[in-house]
Image 1 (cartoon, rainbow over the protein chains, first blue to last red):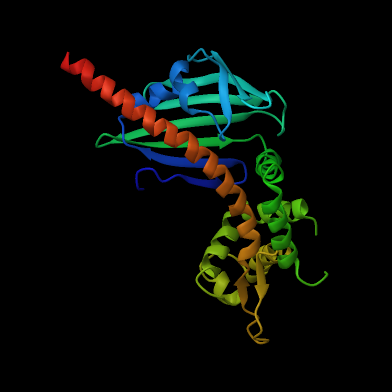
Image 2 (image 1 turned 45 degrees about the horizontal axis):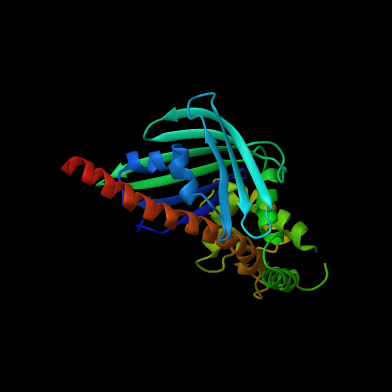
Length: 165
Length: 116
């Protein structure tokens, strides 16, 4: 995989998998995922959001708490979970649950870092409790999307439905 | 069919490895049921059952040839799924581009520490 190219796929019926190559050794990539002062500098989501709360107790059984705030309207979104496995600088496993649950149950996030020739391949696997939960995540993304593309999606789906059945 | 309902059918159809293999085969051109059954250690009725699920989800359709009834891929429902993945990807691309910049900064700092 080329440096900088992000690949996202669904795997089986409960998982989403992301892979990305970084031009840095994995100790630094691991630090950037486990030190709060570093995490809050990049894990911000869409433009216009900041991360005022970023508390992380990175050890097995330790918890983390993240809150994002929209700079203009003050909307907040929080989530947190518990670390299940911590093996620096190669593996980090944590549960994830949003304050306002938009999918059933908890998700389990597994971060795996593999280094080769000074570059690091990151694989992030999000495993949901059920297919329904994974699909809810995907649907919520669709429903919160800009109206134009949702309309386009409706058209697309109407076109594929074809004749009445 | 409602958009969300249709999406459920697409995901249910994609959840099975045999059905994903059938779609991958059809991506390289249409094929008859016999041709589709060949690579799998499966009876024709078993394959037909999978084909029915794919058809209900709108992922495949039947060609015109009345004798062979070849199945072909219908790419549009897959595009709906890809559409969401694309938006999700853009958000994470933003995150990871910021992470790229941060890593460059950390690498420079590490070099400077070594020099001192």
